Amino acid sequence: MGYTKIMYLGIDIGGTKTLAATLTNEGVITESVKFPTPKDYAEFKKQLKETLKGFKHQEFKACGVGLPVTEFDRKRGVAIVFGNLPWQMVPIQKDIEKIVDCPVAINNDAKLAALSEAMLLKQYSKVLYVTISTGIGTALVVDRVIDDNVGDAGGATMLLDFKGKPTPWEKFASGRAIVERYGRFAEDIPKGDPVWPIMVQDWTRGFLQLTAMLQPDVIVIGGSVGAYFDKYGKLLAAALKKHETPLMTIPPIIQAQRPNECVVYGAYDYAVQKFKDV
Image (cartoon, rainbow, N blue to C red; front, side, top):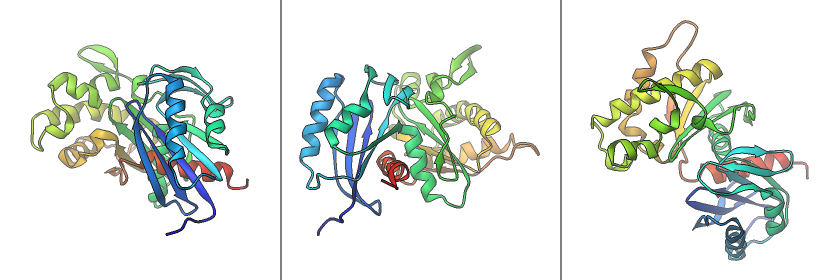
């Protein structure tokens, strides 16, 4: 099977793994490779370059990249602070452009995941995406365009009361928090376990704040904990519905349709939007 003439490259850089994929002009993945994300930035660049050499297709119209950044200078393409990587102040846009030899569009990984899901939910104008994994990321997409005014730090800077103290939401409601609090991963906690109603209570407070501020038409949950939506989804929807008022409608809350590859697809969508006229 041959390849179309126009191809894109999508890269999802995570705190533990990096996923790189080639996509057709129509957004179909043709090849993908995953490798552990090195903690050393120089080693990461070397590993990425070697990995991309293995792809059959080597020429791309553009490349989209998702980063787990909490602070990002979009004008200069400099990643200032990462949530789960020790990299700081890295000129990642220029560095990746040198490796892939094509225009590069970079954004926060949660925002690209949100864009990917929003492209599948064209019946909704405002899509709020919340990824619950090691941390908690948030993003808003309006009419299939990322709203960069919604901060990159997500649940890291959203303060809620926890045991009488203002605490970042992700400190007590993320996947990492579940392991720290209960000694089990989400995948190991069965449906009906008493852990889920407790977590739903903690998630509800954050989702209510986001709903009140952003007034989304739909909420999409992704990430490693999002993959187990069937274990708590109905509980969460019911808990949120109890707080609905005439001034605050609780939107549908659903699971991400492509939880494992949504950032790569979003990277493709973002690159297409940024470089459609190139």
